Image (cartoon, rainbow, N blue to C red; front, side, top):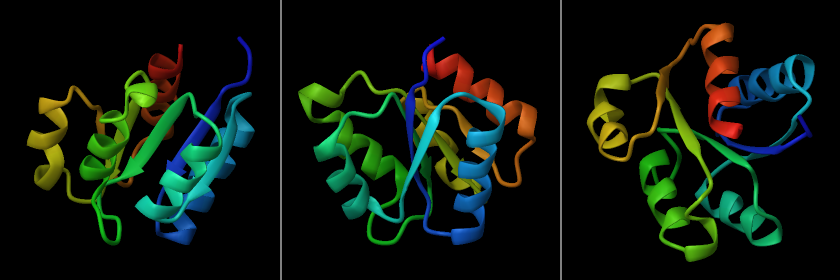
Length: 121
């Protein structure tokens, strides 16, 4: 399988660092990080990632709202995504409506990697 690009949108530096490092060590994929929705949209304007990993609790716009704004644009409707959150009950209904997997922090490494591989194929 060829390397794919994964955009992680996470405002917590330690969690983002762990996610990026895990992707670099455990997969052949390239991980990029944005700290908020505005930064993520600027990155997506430069290239189209193969997968989005979105924190639910982002400053200014939550992960579901960011997903909706990205997928509202025709060129980006095909990009798969999943949500990571410390408050799964808060976003579970919205994620389910969009068929978005939602992993509760802290998540199991195996579940995280399996979710990436199932969505990025």
